[in-house]
Length: 114
Image 1: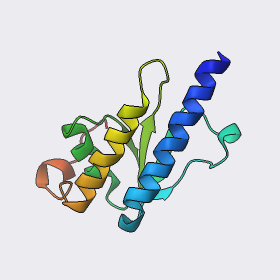
Image 2: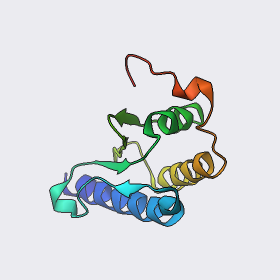
Image 3: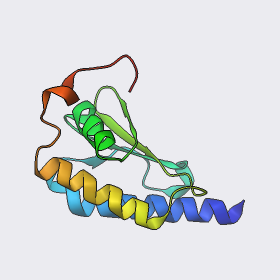
Image 4: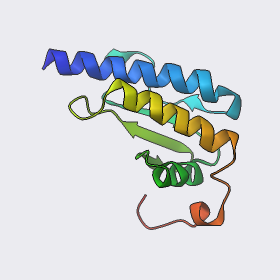
């Protein structure tokens, strides 16, 4: 179990580092505790257009969820998620933000469940 927790922490720290480095200029701010001892295996960020951003991410193969009013959240299950998955997800998030891929009608229409 400790090996799984250690990998979970490393995945989370990588995601935080990648998103802050790649996407900080787009206004994303860490919402989860920075201290690994105070968080589980998920990482959340404040994101102004979070619902549409998450829908665009899902359409591009990155699965996460949205919590009102402005939280995008990523689960990092260490049995199924690898470090390459985290790098790819951060790169996709950067692309969605940089190219405003989220700014399309199909991503702004709210569904009952996110």
